[in-house]
Image (cartoon, rainbow over all chains, first blue to last red):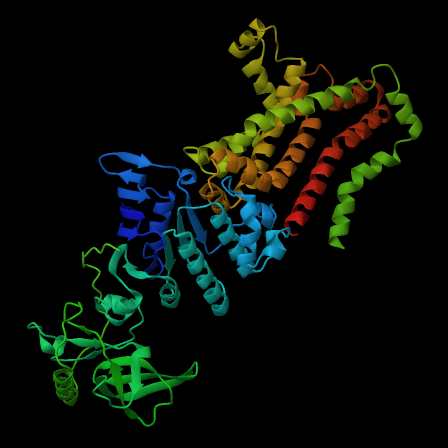
Length: 363
Length: 251
């Protein structure tokens, strides 16, 4: 079990994170660049000291900056860190790299090399390896070192999508097999979803939301989280929220992948808007739509037909004027209110950020 | 074309040396009793100088490269000052620093040593003339080693000393070898400081100077050839070894 509850001083803003990862569990810290994700990993690895709090691994206190001060040096922490640059030792062969750790057992090498697909490369020098092979070697080096926790700092960000998928699957299998807690840091939501059992959205040094990957994406706790997980527009949804929220200020989050063409009120919120632009995207089309003052982007299987189209936003999250996820009313109430709102051509659009929120999540 | 012109121009003095030397001159100059003593003195003093540099200056270079020293610019400025002082001036100042009538001179005296006109004085002069070149070269060599690779080694359970021995030193070694080669060349050719505080025992540069002074240019030239022949192998070996290490890394 990896347990982290720390505050770290940084030049721009402090990072405050509480995190618990069970053996064999995989957690992804997802957020924009500079949010403080890597700082969390560096604190766990012993490369950055915390200002306050503790880091514990399997009951061992690795760092404590509270009543007592503990700072176990990184070389005694038994924590493996895999970065985007795999950091292979360029003067050593693949075999020597894999067996670098004093705790590495040569007897385990052949089977692991086979599993990682690098058995034929053991005598090669790192400079001769492809990007994917280097990452496999770096991963093997960590596994042979028998680390008690695996930290992954956007390790595959520079690789192509197919290679990234296969390596993510490999790490996922190996971390489960070894039953070590794993923490992945990434700004690619798809990587986080592919890897993690739990997802924590981090921004400006604070965890904004934590939960299952589906839960975080489908029910973001705030508009800021929604923006971070890919919602590309917010349409007015007056009457959507219950609990006395000012109706006209409630908005529905539109995720471009959660939109279908046509009006289907049984499946979600129907929005009729003007097509501002449409461009091919993958196997379909990406369209920018405007409904009243609100604009949003959606992906549709076919090119939008005509200047004005209706789309259905599938089961959208609603946000109150404070930016927080609002409790929902019946879909019919929402749709009725939206129709009235459309008729009046009112409403407003996104981008109010809620960095001031001091809610802390234990991940 | 330009490169060839520069290369030949730089080689000009060496070519001139060979043009003005005959096998007879070399034989006559180097076969007398004690004629090779300056060569042995230079090699011994150069070897001791390199050992001193490796032992004392390598840690300094590492600390400079890794920002482990407070006020690093002050340390760098100190190095540059010793680099910018003309060797002759260094020699004069060394007399005031370690000469027989100074506190250090007295301490050395109690130990039955002297830092003027002794082998120790020769080594001191060579260290002062070559150390800044070695430290600057070694600092650059250490700076070229990615600290993230060192961190990776630490996270694999290697202690800092082990990381230095197994990662930092091997990766910096080609650069260190080159710095050592430059320092060796400086030490073997050291003259300015040497002529002030270590006129005796003669190394090769002083032998050249005194022979030129006493018997003329022709009889001094064979010693120049000897200096070239004994000073060249180490830098050449460093070059070759560095190139091989680089090739090996590239697989």
